[in-house]
Structure formats: C-alpha cells, structure tokens
Length: 336
Image 1 (cartoon, rainbow, N blue to C red):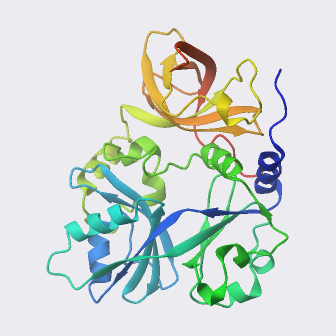
Image 2: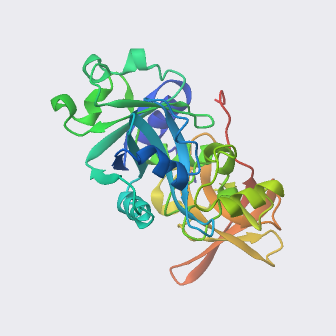
C-alpha cells in the first residue's frame, strides 16, 4: 500500500508551489574580464551579450562549431568589460576550457570563482521581503531574476564569504528551505534541462527546448550558429525532443522513498512494446501528481500526450511501469 511522501519533501514542495522557498544549489562560476570581453563573448555565446546593460542577465548556449551543445549557461554583465558566467555544478572547468579553446589574439582573462548560489522560488518570492538587509546592501551578491514555468523567482549569486555570511543567511529565517528532492521535482515539472543529464555533447538545442530561451537570431554570428539557424528555419523539426513523463506508482511504492523510483537510465518504450524510444535522465517523486515524474528525450515516433512504459533491470529481473509522455512544462504558473 502506498504511504504519504516524507514531510520534508511535501513541505518544501508546497512552499515552492504556493508560498516561497529557498534552496542552495550547486553552481560553478567563471569570470570573464578584459577590453575584448564583450566582443569575444558575443562571438561565442548564442545570446546577445553586447545588448546586456551592466546588471543584465541572460541564458545562453556554448556550442561546438558543429552546433552541438557544450554547455547551457547564464551570462551576467557586472561591468563594462566584465562578466560572470554561471553554470551547473561540475561544469565550470568545462566552460572555462571551452572559452579558452577559441581565445586567440584577444585581451580576455578567464577565472574560476568560489561563489555560491541560493535560489528562491514561489509566488511570494519578493526580494524586498525575503532577502536579508545585509545581503541586499552588498554589491558582491548578485540578484538574478529567474522565469521557471510554474516556479518563478530569483537567484542570489556571490562569494561564499560575502560580508562574512554563509549563503543561507542571504534569505530570511522565515523562508522555508526545501530539500533536494522537492527541488528536483520542481525542476523536472518545469522542464529545465541540466548539463550532464539532459544535455551532453551530442545534444542539439532544439531537442531540449532551449532555442527560444537562449538564442538570439538578430545578434550576428556565433560559434555553432549554422545548425541552430538551419533547424529554426525548418520549424525546429528534430528526430527527438525532451518530454516530461508522469509515471504510475508501482506496488509497494513508498510515496517519495527514493528506492521506489525508476533509476536514471531506465528505458522508455512505446505502449505496444515494439520500440525503445529514450531513457530517463532525471526522475523524482512529485507531491502534485502523487507519483514519480521524469525527463527523457524521446524519439519523434512518440507524440505527447501518449502512453508509454518504463523498463529497467534490477535484482535479476525486469521491472516495468506505465507512464504518460507529456509536453513540457508539466505545470504552469498558478497551478496548485
């Protein structure tokens, strides 16, 4: 018999959905400075970096010359010739290496920074009410607006020792701190891909829904532009696309117990069992759906909404659960 999800998961998720919650997330930071910083990043990033004013921020892609994704990043302009680029934890060195690869005869310096990120989401994510006065008055702590479908808010990004405070102290004590599990459920429902999960060096931006979010077609040329522009002119028709899955709970599912979730890498099959169409890249228990939710990049023979199945091997046997593939996001702003 299924039981209720653990209290930390439920409370954190409910706060994200209906109130306001904070979560310390792992982000790697690369600072880019120098007299050629603007022109260099303009030619490397998919976004219009030159159009950012000081204090401006934009999501962007770093692509290979063949148009495949090297990294999904956020570019923050902190000065006339200074930028801070943040990306998923564990990928800062890869971003720095990627930028260094094309740094020829330009006056640009690249540096990895030991910074932290505190993310705040929910209908009550009002910086004037939830950010502590000391953090709000510290120019070294950046406040970056974030538009997640269903979970809008902002991120606080800055040195771990800014003003002698730990990142957790950047947000008032009355704000709920959500667990990793609650945060992952929200990210999956919002349909936000991660480097190393939904994104790898064979991924095309159109496959994971990042063209509208992170590409400017008016800025001029950038590395990898040709493939992105060609696909966009053809309606972004690709062989596979990122989808959300709402997965049926299995026998004895503990309603949030991690051992009962399908594992990462579990195969997704068509409902007739004839075709393997993808693999789970992220999975979490969703209090909203009362079942596991997941992300998977699926072959175009699946047209959401469509019934599929999830299969994996464990304990010497094959396990299978029914699921529905759906378009992303799984939730919209205002869903409760």
